[in-house]
Length: 231
View (cartoon, rainbow, N blue to C red):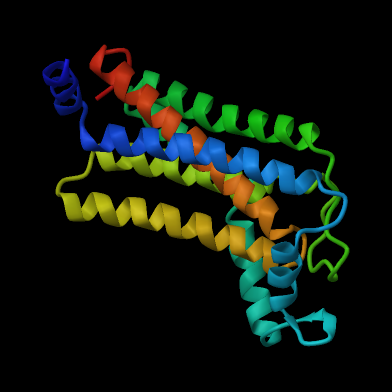
């Protein structure tokens, strides 16, 4: 029995194990954070972190100069619907022009599915935007989870993992994936700085986004081995 288990473990590659672990942790984290979001009163860590981005005793005044505020607005735009749609469309068109039709369809399903999932999750927990600090951006949708954080993870990680398949060398692949993660984290933090999300909203968005992106990566790996998706 032990020998069969060891043989099974040896057949499973480390990236697959890591992706499976990220999916499991992401789902667990999202469930735990959803309980925080359902509480009638904000959690202590939510209020403390949100206030940490404001001048002491001035909830309407963010830390840093006006230039920093402008830079944060630019960063948060990287997770906006328009920017992510343009990036996704450009990628799909590229794969279409290079006749990788199945890959183009896969990108549409992965990113589009993430958008649908984000909308459904927001409806599942009717959490209003934080009123503890002033909003430095106009938002009308529900707060939990952060759509910017989730869809940044879905889009950038999906495209990053696809790009890594065509790159030579481990260092280059690690760089591309690290860049995708960095942009995702920056977008999430920007939402807290702007005061439009509780930190738990952003954490939940990351959990759901990372889990979805890794599920898509696992699906792509499975389809690639079955020759159902382009090399």
